[in-house]
Length: 226
Image (cartoon, rainbow, N blue to C red):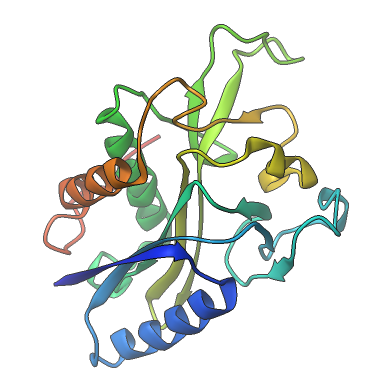
């Protein structure tokens, strides 16, 4: 069984981190069920284990929290659905790369409910939306914007941290960092793409697509490919 926890209002990063660490420890010892926690944070930046100092362009804009999740700098704030994922990966094949791809597949499946096609790209963790109406990149590639970020940590094969989906955040807040260390691509949201989507709509899509991707909690026989 996976417990779904949804918090109204804004949840502090400190509160979220304390809960995740305690719950992950309980899951590892068999004293608690797996958990997906859906919430919003006040505006803040987090620095993953690969974050580079020069990618924090405006260090005084919002609080900055060091994080032991994978990845670089990311932004969280109102209008962004954060899904913290506390799952027992030992039940899911003990394959970290496959687990990350499952998380990506989960977001892509949820986006399909809104008529969007999400993409995953080698070297660019997260989920991307092609923008054919925007100018191409300096390399001549089609413009793409990031709509969802992914960053996890494992302790005793239990995951925490997770994903964030841009529903209707203030996209200018991303200007204080180089999101995930990527400079050639932008950031978008469901509302920025012209979709009148609410947070409740996204929650429904995430719940239904979670079952589609993760099933009853046992990993699929084959890892999804890029």
